[in-house]
Length: 305
Image 1 (cartoon, one colour):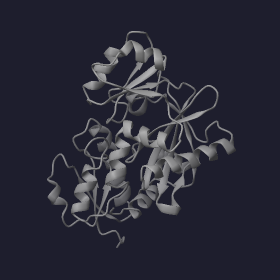
Image 2 (tube, rainbow, N blue to C red):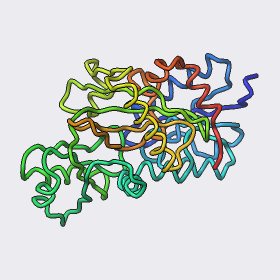
Image 3 (cartoon, rainbow, N blue to C red):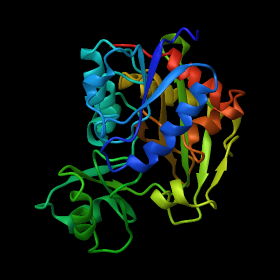
Image 4 (cartoon, rainbow, N blue to C red):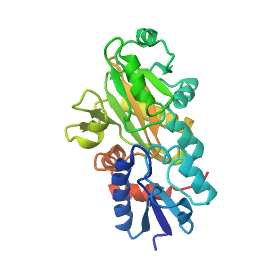
């Protein structure tokens, strides 16, 4: 007996990130089964949630809406099934890029300058205020879905329209162009640790959906290129950023660097990818934790709010 009982691995779902979730979940399921854990695939798009009755734990490998936005977490709460990752509130906050920024700014953490966009926004004025390039993104999507890079004056309106197809809440964010990085986090309470930082070097112009999932020429540097003291400072800040939102169990904090070496926290992913290209398994490996051990550790941390 594994001590975990009957485990549901939730993957697939109905979000725009379904394909990535299917990839993540199948890897997680295989890792659990390989360790003798009584794990079963569960796709909420194909099965009613009440079919989860009788399960002892849930490993959430869903990405995007209805997977990492607090909704599935709330359903599992009602059914008294411990689940992996953050609780209802932290999941909902982290999925909302706008409210994440509000909390981090209130706490004094560095974030890129940004503006909320509506159809009535003065796009020319926002381009002037934020400067170019800037990134336009739906507030509630992941995996770079719906994101545009605006490089030319007069292009913001079209970028807004593209993002608004995914979400009525759209953000324009100042481009911070000195490098893209991420920090994996595993643990809860005082045992929470920040994994080694990964620097992401896409061959594309920025780390878009293609670079994340479909290309083999994206470079991942771990150890990254930061001095040791600077890395530890940012890892400590990433833990604070995660805790401010109420994160627990595991997650990933993305940040950017400018050309002067200043860092700016970008967003939190509370159900990180677990595919062959995924970043948390990569950082865990560098810290001495192989994929099956990481999956088991995340499952051990399953909890209810």
